[in-house]
Image (cartoon, rainbow, N blue to C red):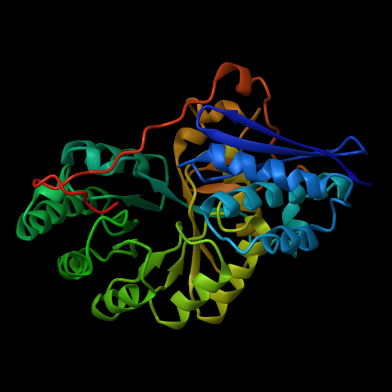
Length: 377
């Protein structure tokens, strides 16, 4: 069996890749690199020159070849490599007629616990956050995550920022009680001083994890924040390799790793990241919000590792535009996803999506301080 073609598809805000073998089997993958997916598309087109004619089952060999083919590293390349890797695992599962997780070592759980992602929380008022929390509880989720920083947080004093954020978290905790775990997402918006100060006031709400309190640029700065914060730290959605995760774990900067299978090297590499985390007694909470295809890929990883704590999940997988990317998404049973017994990733891409939703690219932008300078993001 040999790879016959590698095709890319830009649609909506997504970039997908289809790897087809001469046996007629096709595997699908997707990148979570949503900033400049056109760049990742060009990388995949270069990768195709190597892949066509190769045995699609030599997944690790292809991963190492493509990773080592350039001295440069970045989200565009790792996003491209991730999409290709996911497609190869989908193809391999279909070839052997088993779910991909069976090839990754077999299932370690029967279902995958979710945390409900309250999308764009920082753009919503407290009443809206409370309503979304009620929805999560009513749907049977046992964990949720919100970005509690108030709108235009960068224009506030530190004291006002803390006061408004605490008010919002308190309202959500009062709504869901103590039976539900709450994760707090900061989206890399704070400097270390503000992140440390805010965390002290959030402790009373028994936060499960404090995610991305600062920008993912300095390992030392992350370690400094972790030393002074009592809430467990979760980091990883903007990191790409086992080398970065190893440094974060060794520095004591992180208690939950948050790799995204769509940018951190696909299933091949994320399984290694999970193994590193296991050695440090750290949990895995994979980052995921883009589409039901990437959800299905994430679940393949979740099923095959012992330290899956939660799976990030948005109900956009069940309704709306993203839902239409696949013919049938994975089934949710209240706060859990049920793994598919279908081969490969367990979902089937609906190619009519590409015609219905032409690709749209965004305009680069960043929030500003009151003085006009660029704020953190």
